[in-house]
Amino acid sequence: LQIIESPGDARQWTVATTADGRVALVPTMGALHDGHFSLIRRAKEIAGHVAVSIFVNPAQFAPLEDLARYPRPIEDDLAALRREGVAMVYLPASEIVYPPGFSTYVEPPAVAAPLEGVLRPGHFRGVCTVVLKLFQTIPAHVAVFGQKDYQQARVIVAMVRDLDVDIEIDVAPTVREPGGLAMSSRNRYLDANQRDVALCLARALTVCNVYFSSGTDDVNILEAAMRYELGVDRPDGVDTVDYAVVVDGQTLLPVTRATAGCVALIAARVGTTRLIDNHILR
Ligand code: PAF
Image 1 (tube, rainbow, N blue to C red):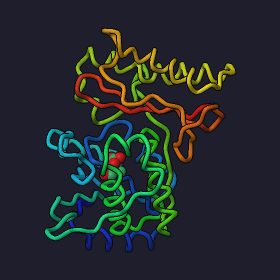
Image 2: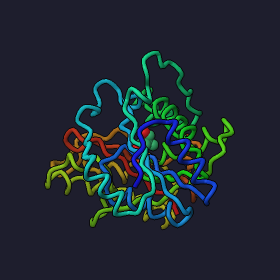
Image 3: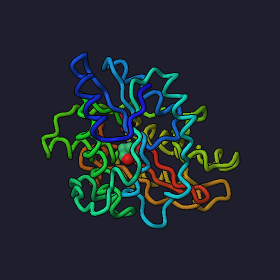
Image 4: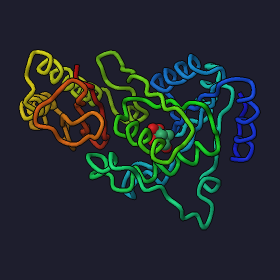
């Protein structure tokens, strides 16, 4: 595992390595878990060489979000990357990515506007900016993102298309813990009881898909069923629901009748931990 901290060295590594075969990039914020490992394994299937970036990007956190307490178990992460046979990890310091005087940001595409765009203003501006910087620094053939961050994946696909970035975007299925909880670095914040409560996100998405596949396409009914499963008014339910919606799978705009390819998306809080999950309707 080559550990690289400067953009120049990362670019040089990528240019040299692409001469020898396909390179896949897996961008992460560290605190790696099985969800990340599945992205890395998928990257290995589609490219001979895998690079991973680990950078907790301050530009995508709002002032009151969890930037300071975001887990940073770097030694464990490096050991895991070695185990997974990753060729290079890009590990830049914050001052390298955002040096004094940094002032250029990417205006995110339209698909960034609803949902997370309303609840986390500035989040996708930070994501797009850092991801575009990563694509410049590590000009890989393909970058792998998780479907768990559904809106983020749509935003990156649109940014790459709109800005003619020469990279293929691969979106890999969500990996779940037993019981269905979508894997996330933020699951570390949950205690045992909160983990049980958190299972209702996956349950709500399953119920939504069962209703849909048995012929219910009225979005009001599908959304009400998800809200009921989330149990916000019950002691065994989540603490708050930011959204539990069925929307167009491409634009993420509201629909009244669901069709296959629409997506059910949930953001909810269990204690102080904000969880997101989604399911493409079939
Ligand atoms: O999904 C993430 O971990 C982050 O949003 C990303 C894509 C690495 C950008 O910081």
